[in-house]
Image 1 (cartoon, rainbow, N blue to C red):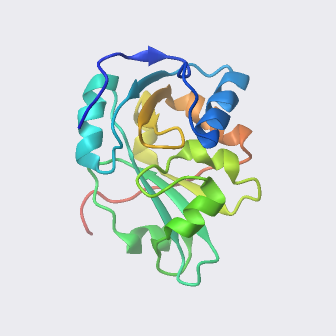
Image 2: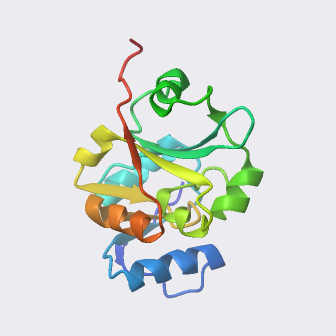
Image 3: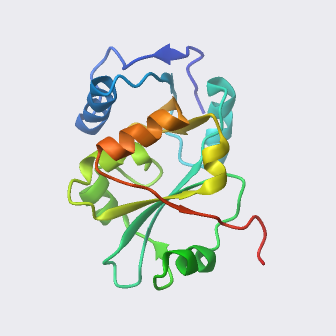
Length: 183
């Protein structure tokens, strides 16, 4: 996997997808600083570990989930090293057992594709169809990294700046505590 050795500040000089451009515009409007690393499409957490070294910050797991009826959608942010167990999250959210949502809903609500989803795409969920859920230990980190619309770039933002961004997109995160091991 190719990773550009340069760590950039600010948006790319060349034109990106409409979704990426909108995300960079929102970050600029909110005066949120970030650093950026460009790379090949990063689909796996293994790819992300290589990018983490360049960014100097961990990349979290971002899971796009839904209930069985596909009427409730969630974007879960959690530590990449922690295993995901749906029963613990479902119990804390008080909803039916969750599963992974499909790419059709991801494209419709968040304007992105599987492997690229992050909290930055909440900008496109103007009807609040997606509830942001954050595993509390993630908020102990100084930085949170996210893909801006497509997983060919990764941004490192201060935790508080990411929270400012999602709140400016009219999304208030729900905090949960997911166990490290099955209890």
